Image 1 (cartoon, rainbow, N blue to C red):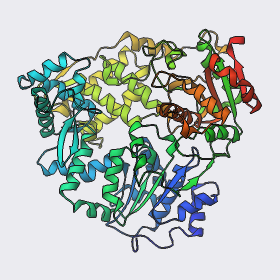
Image 2: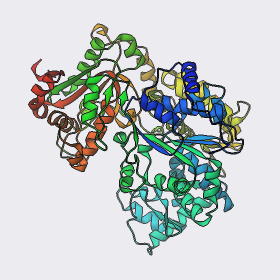
Image 3: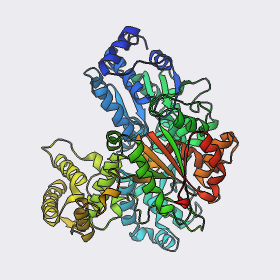
Image 4: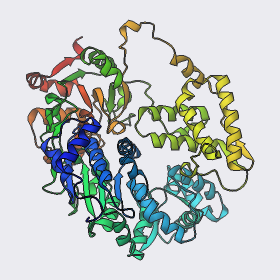
Length: 635
């Protein structure tokens, strides 16, 4: 990368000066190695090892030394949350802020594919993109399905269980140089030459001509574009001589293949960072046999976690399924505990955990990082096995739903606000709320309202004013009373009409009793408040907590996906027996991998809940290891 940035970018005195400026802890040897390496490399980072901080530091140093005005740094992550965290870190310095504009790019892999490959391909065909959004596609597909041209397809799906999913999930897949229409995760239930298949293909392509796409479509379009226009690859790689990939373990097989097509054979320096033991998306496992699968053999490691201490680190080390890693705990001296329960005491698990957290964790830490109660499954299935899901421990548990599933807009706003405040995926929450608004305000003529990404950002524009109202809904909807809701719906009606520039049909704007009860409950205090911990545990899935840090975390035993084994008891067996995780059944590996993700969230207290019939046999060994074992059936 000669001439792209100053040669002294990573010299010792510059690194130390930047560390001091950012107020960071002194670097260890592994961190120094990663910072000063200027060639392609992989970094396997243990949970809590300061990976994001280190990425921010490296980017700040690079921004400070960057000289090219036409070539830039490309930083890619898996989620908008991770992307925003990186962007916020580099924006804290004047030099770092330069990375937020041309010629640099910080975004998700999805947005990179959209910006540099798929959208140019679509526009080259003379199509104006209206939306790249699964929910928007679903609405448009169901509407178009009612057209007489699709009567055979409509009749077919009406006679199938969940048949509309065939239409709403219709996706472009790249095969043999062409875009073919498939289901989102499987082949279609009819032959390619049938009338239903031909009508589905026609419907999908009709929506594509209107500029309405699903997220996954963009990858197939990008693959075809690269194949038909081989000059794109050297152009993109020349634009970005340095690429940093974060959260590499969650890269899907399709994403991995596309990134390899663009950068693998170029002179671009590609540095990939992640933790393969936190790979929880099934598609990511498809690429394990690839020669470029992450992490490469000989990859550098960050084994020291500053999130938690030795006890939790020991558990993490035993549960590292995908790649053995001895995690070293350099954080607070934490505690590991196990709660044994039966059917009669399952509902006592979360309250017991809350009381333990209140005693063990300093109050200021608990308030800053509230405790979480996590499980792999949200709801019970048809199996008679027990326990199956979070709802077995928290009766009446309602997961943060898709806001568009609510008939009343205020309920959609409350659900989106809950998801937004949880931090699980704030971008998704905003998108879902906007889709709920689009469903409540429908133009009487012409196309629907634009997707969220097409709204202007300036407060002087209709789109910018809608963004302000969206934030108002996310922040305050849970507390709205009848009067406040009437005021906000009046504002929404005015602004949505201005945005659409044509008459609108409204639906679902009423103030629901459920919302009123919620507003009243928000300010209420439990009658027996002395018996209730100051900070209540927030239930949710392990998947939703990925990337979070908690003061205390409870892992609730759930039935693994094959319905034969229970995740926490399998994890405890592996910890106590010291068995090799890579010799376990694939289904057990997947279940334990989720437990690993959940177990590496807390700083001070990790609690594992397992049924007494399965966990009691390990009690003596766990006590010998210094764990706190409590049998709720004996109290």
